[in-house]
Image (cartoon, rainbow, N blue to C red; front, side, top):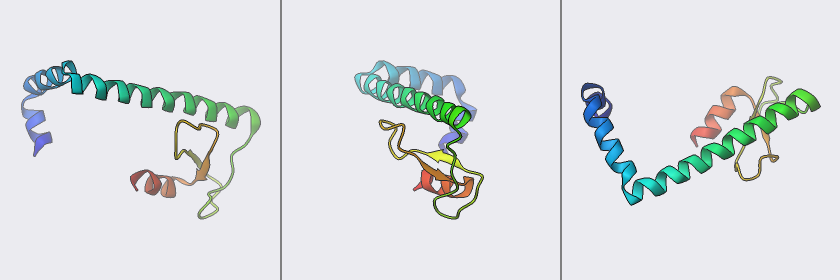
Length: 95
């Protein structure tokens, strides 16, 4: 329902978003999102470099599949990784 309204009224939606971002609550939320996003970017760079130069990729911790992705429980600790296949990584991110 909301997405349909957004599609039908894009200018009104942008106006609502600008007003929220200008509020105190919106400024705090934006700062939190920026901080989390920056941690994710830094972590992704670290993992990609470790993969490329140190060949650290392991098999899935759940099913043993060799084609894995790095999963982070906490972006504040970028070197603590759990290697999961695509299927289990998607399930882990949803939970």
